Amino acid sequence: MDRFRTFIDRRLYRIRGFLHPSDAMVLATIMAFQAQRGWKGAHAEIGVFYGRSLALLAFDAAQSGSRVLGIDLFDIPGQRAYVEKHLGQLGLSDVLTLHAGSSLETPAAQALKAIGPVRLFSIDGGHELVHIDNDAELAADALSCSGVIAFDDFMNAQYPDLSRGIIRFLEAHSDRLAPFAITRAKLYCCPPQVYEAYLAAISRVSLWGGAWIERFVFLEREVVFINQPLLGRALYQTLAEQGLGQLGDRLAPRARQRFARQ
Image (cartoon, rainbow, N blue to C red; front, side, top):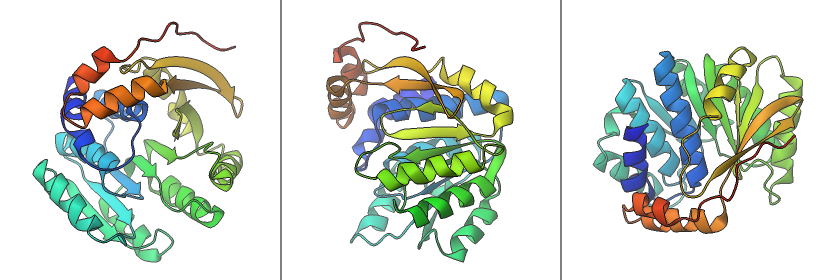
């Protein structure tokens, strides 16, 4: 985990984008756990934006000798050039493949087939039902037998259909995906046969920035909730943008208690 913490504290938040520190904790924990188990596979993301979360996936891919695929419309002026420049400055160009286009199009599926089974798939593309249905199916089909899908903006009140679509998909495919962790921004799911392993791993997540753990039941399964107060998140992220994430962690108020919700 030390290699992830150093990268996140000093480099990651210099890149534009959206990634709650609690999700950086979870993603790092998942990838470190996969490496510990010897689980191989590529990484993929639908909805790159300016590349902050993609950079974290690419960092792990560079360490593990795998690849990362980013699918995005890249329709913001200068967006793709920004991603290529900043990931290049981090020395991550060699593991990176960018696909310009909609995930609804056939070439997106072809690009996924080209990189092989995916062990961590981040979904942050279109937020309408048609996109959720398509992207969830696309990710589930590409996922390795021990992989993880991270659904962004789950339970975000601004996108009620997105949450509805994810829940509907999970209920219809409970034999393929099981939720095991949730944050304020993302829902994490894996194949049922590795659910217990991921639940145990995420229960030992490395916490910083004042974050803490709770537990509750969702879709008849126990899930781990990693929570972080707004002040702790803001302090950590503001300083991490200057490469001072370690200081942000020290200054963030500590959680008063960690408890399991029954």
